Length: 448
Image 1 (cartoon, one colour):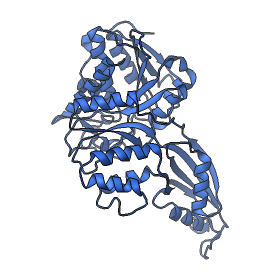
Image 2 (cartoon, rainbow, N blue to C red):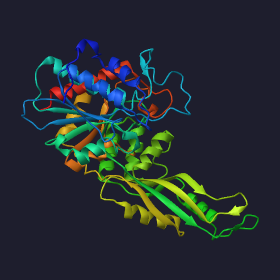
Image 3 (cartoon, rainbow, N blue to C red):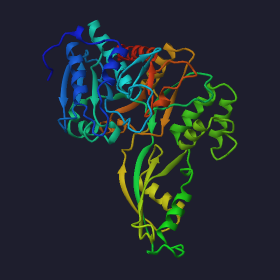
Image 4 (cartoon, rainbow, N blue to C red):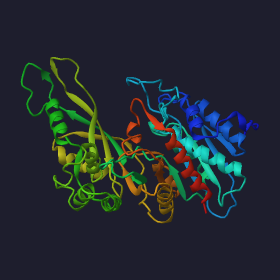
């Protein structure tokens, strides 16, 4: 239920002003504490005349559902965004990460890209549409959620599992793009439209060994020896090459659009991902990203073991971050490949298994998103992107909703804003925020 109407003049309506206000709410997760930020967004939308509703699994971490009624001619469209951000502790920031300072045309602060700046684009477009007074063909629903950065238990997962009726009739959703970025020579401006994500399988590997005095050689039965075998086996992160249809389509479009030599390198990689020469001369960050898209990957992230310096450990626990390619792959595929690769006894416990997303669709709605980008930036190259990270887009497909990651950005080729996601000195150009808001407005007025 909406609160009492507020004065619209009390709130910013431009994406930069909105983003500044959002950044100044410290919503670091953990603990999150998104309430003040979410309540401010509710007040902003109440003042604009939208229908709003707060729902919370944890009262300190509410979620907002806002609806701009349409004419009922087409299904509702869902926009979703999270307001929690990752920590700044231990990072060396040049400016106050929660100051929302505008310096030399750039807005600084945690969440400028992920994803308070993105949310500001959506909000500015919604406010503009509401002010025009012409209802869109279908309802527009905005879900402003908590807890995306730490599993979504109090955010999108809670809404999907306990309040699915809020999304009745929705067929398409637009959310974050997971920091999807490829430079690929930076000779053309690339506009990724995320159509698929790798999904997480987090595992605890327990290695058992023969304890004893550390002054003696441990031998192959020692837990530390098995740890060495495990880490050596997964060095590089990949578990074998596999080209999926979504990645193949992505590489096909990039190879055709990129100037040489980068188009040729992508084409060579698509033809033979195992050829070490295919990506020769390419930026190593881009090369690692592309290799991650043709492999299930696994990386050791946390190690626990031992009780004293002079005692051989009887047990070592290793936490592994596994990421499965999009498609019909599950935990058993991952565990089998991991055991085969490591080749020593170990207990494997699945800690987290992400949701499986449906096969991507590159038809009408994708073409709409790509077409807006091409119309707004004729020299840019929209393309279907597969990301290595996962977002709340993994959850809404449970309700039959096809999800896309779409962060429209326009900036100089030598700038990287997505690359600052989760990093110190996160920032975004004011012009990029304005461009994104215009793109979202175009999407909403063409929602037919």
